[in-house]
Length: 276
Image (cartoon, rainbow, N blue to C red; front, top):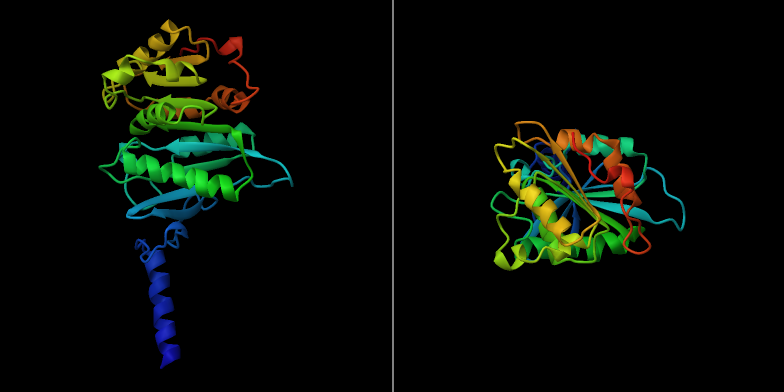
């Protein structure tokens, strides 16, 4: 009888993973996400739990690593269309392809938030950074001088929020079609935190979802402060999707990986203004 019960439990566990049933009984900290994932299998699946807040995430590790070597970490923040708990919709294929073609070994951290959450919400920001600081930086050989943050749309707003809330943490920020709706007048009257970090912004001129004026305001405000580490790419397109072109541009990866918190370098002069 015990063998039959054990077999049934194993079968239930297998079918649950196969058909995407969200894992239950999670402990605080990192848990393996045992669901079956057909695509992007090289991105390992986990769920980070902190009290009542759970953060599914995928993690890409360097395909080969050398003893004693440290590697960059890219934090990727998805948009509103990829929210949920399935731990797969946040895997943006042009980001993944661009990273694959960049030629740089690194870690990539792709968390997923629920539909009514924003990246700067207190509970989201707390669990996101606990996962980075208490788990990723403790468990993997990550170069803390080379942590980068990028994201699109709601994730682009999340990039700005991360830069503002965690000054001195990221070596570079790459917001794509991001917005400033969630910032109050205190922030919008002080763009200095955004002038103190290498940043490459991208937006479509005719974006019908998030006005290009958000990116133009950020760019002009940083320039007005004397910022010299900001680049702005504005594509002559009338759609929201600026990320396909952006993440497919090898220049952005070359630039990003060149940035370091300490002993870093300013953007090469050839990138001073990158419009297409």
